[in-house]
Length: 57
Image (tube, rainbow, N blue to C red; front, side):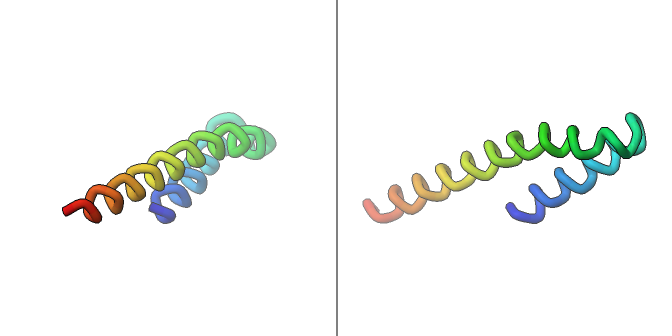
């Protein structure tokens, strides 16, 4: 999961830099980071639910 977030941030930052200019990369990363955080939080929630469901078996 961490590799997906890193790829999202790195590739997204590079694409934003190429399209809008390298000065916009920081702003773009500031917008990409909350999205990556939501993905990580959802992944952690699903992992926790999976572990809880396996305990009941």
